[in-house]
Length: 319
Image (cartoon, rainbow, N blue to C red):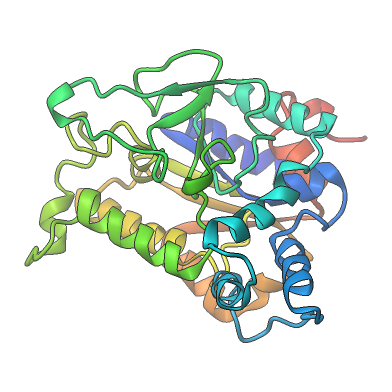
């Protein structure tokens, strides 16, 4: 296992040119030490409060669909009140020294960090900036509904690919309207991305509109989309199961983009543990393999957060 950690660290270091980390809620579960902050747990609590019934087995329904059902069933006056009820446990999620340590590790790598998390635990203590497009005429102004040009860092950056900064994919606690929870919202986000950034409407050939996505003059340059398309991705703490409709679609689009441009140097790693039951699913393995994402299995989560990410590899192994 020591060699496996060393190998993956070496691979990441060999690909520091345009490397980005994609981080999920696993970082909170590991840092806090329990599953109370898991998305499943938060939604279950909301369901119990609204319906007065227990819903423990969600097999057959994705968590995003489950939120849509919550909206249909909820007794609040409007959807924003339900969203606030869901967000409250996230707001009260504790920030721990482990969060600080992991943030320090990520900052030491000096690479962009994309996160699906709504909380600010990874970007705790960092300043919020808006990335200005280097060519103003191509700038696409974002909003509090899609604040994709906002990032968190110790300094302002010019090139989103070249510096450490934290970018929120599915919304941030700083912008309540930006938080995407339901299947309906994910589909709207997908349509917004496809129409405004990746492909024009009524485009006969989807590939045609890929041509400028690595340039500083495409509308997505000042957003996290530029990082997603033009970086090797190291995925950590993110299940990427069927619930992640939007993100899985983006990974497929990224693969089309890589193949179209011949960017063979853009790679991907999905780092998990030997206990990950989801990786036993044949379909999920095929999904990663066909997208060129290498699955790396380590013994436990400490190997990931204190081994792979650690500044000094030699300190991460107990001899």
